[in-house]
Length: 114
Length: 115
Image 1 (cartoon, rainbow over the protein chains, first blue to last red):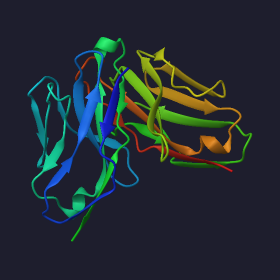
Image 2 (spheres, rainbow over the protein chains, first blue to last red; image 1 turned 90 degrees about the horizontal axis):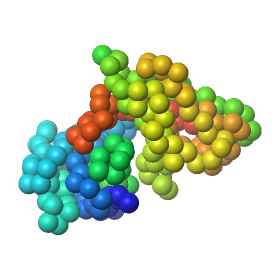
Image 3 (cartoon, each protein chain N blue to C red; image 1 turned 90 degrees about the vertical axis):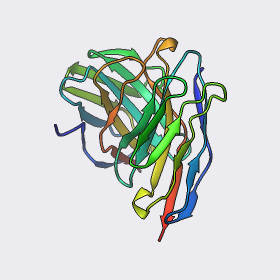
Image 4 (tube, chains in turn purple, yellow; image 1 turned 180 degrees about the horizontal axis):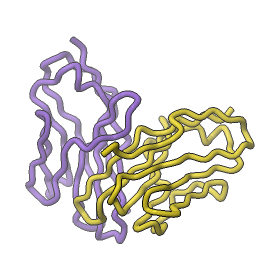
């Protein structure tokens, strides 16, 4: 079956530090990959996505590249801000499995301190 | 658009009582999902509807849980009878279409506490 593995948190960084959150996946087909973000007390919001190998998704200074050879989709940001403090979820959807549901990782909590 | 609307935002109930969670998806979206979020298990998909028809309910934990989507603008998730281990945040999400690259839009969730 499909699965997503994220690095465990929590991650605490100082403002303007470089961020990497690792994500690897297992899928039966050829999935699309996503990063969602959850701010305190809110639902998940799509941060970025990539639908095929070597695609780079980007938004709000965050980037992630779809690496088929390493089955990875690591999230990066060059300079984090306090407002980036949230929980980040890596996810995949694999229509080849016959269902268009999203499979999520367990989430990584990021805290950015001034 | 107001986004996915869930009600209530918070629910506290006693063990054994019936609980009904409600969801209004974004107009025009034809897929609807119910998720449960806990610290221990993370996000779990409970059930998925497409065009108001349940497609995959394999994530529904047991017969105490049931979900309906009587029309394109409304869905309910019911727990009867409720138990303390059902305490969690329940999210509803909708999507404009199926396919490999869809984005799911989430509501703000219902925080359920069963005492």
